[in-house]
Image (cartoon, rainbow, N blue to C red; front, side):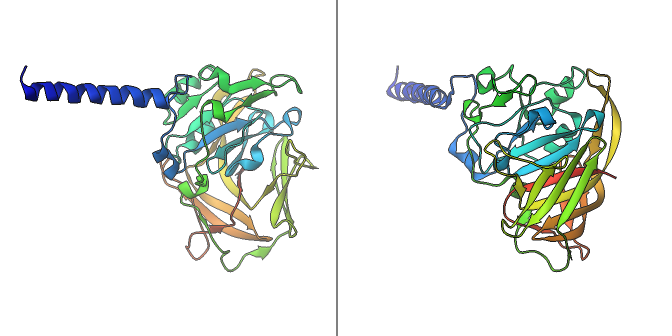
Amino acid sequence: MSTSGTKRSATAALAVLTLVLTAACDSTGMGETRPTSASTSRADVLAVKIDNVAAARPPTGLEKADIVYVEQVEAGLSRILAAYSSQVPSVIGPVRSARETDLELLRQFDKPTLAYSGAQSALRPSIDTAPLEALPPSKAPRAYFRSGDRSAPHNLYLRPEKIPHPATGVNAAEGLGLRFAAAPPGGTPASRRTASYPSARFTFTWSADKDKWLVGMDGAPARTSSGDQLAAATVILQEVDVRDTRFHDRGGNTSPFSSTVGSGPAAVLRGGRAYDVTWERSTAGSATGFTTDDGKAMTFATGQIWIVLVPK
């Protein structure tokens, strides 16, 4: 073999060895790929479906979410979809099943990971084709565990480090184009607002001392697993169309779908004031925008945002 041929062979062998070593260094031991440093430059979103019935409270890790979505589910109850990026706690839960509403909501993000306990068989094909990384326990069994302090099905929890999914330091809201800045002029004084579903109720009470909106559920303070009251820097009460779907739960209750593509009114609560705004999302692949009466983009208080999908 010629000298040039020997050099080409050596170069090719080195390239193959480099790829093998890189794969080995990025392997998590779970058949997953560990994110590289480039992934920390944007909001890599971990979305977790969290149980919200009385038997599932208090939640663990919800206070670390960037965005907390609240949606109506079967029998008029509520469930939470929490989006994490800037911070990722060591444990999140209790984790419950996915809904059709989640798939449309998550189209706003760039291929997020969705952690959920399962889904109706009829919905699974839609999850499989959605532009997200589906992560039920069957795909990452070591990332989930059952707690002994409450009964099933309200005791399934996620350990994000086992996926793995590290914090990026980038707020998921910023990835949607929402801007944290000083409040716009206007608004009206507000100390308390309520959002209701047929079988669930949320209240948000302004605390000047904490500079946040304290969260209440079904007439009682909503607590974290450590005993603190859940609190939001900004609350968005977004009016949406809610319709029945072809999906049903085991009890025969119809699964509702909250449509987040389109436009409508919303109320933004921040700094002890309420702002009437318009929300608009032209396509499933675009992010939701919120504008004030003068057509300017609404700004938000730094910290956690709660977005409650309220039936029109």
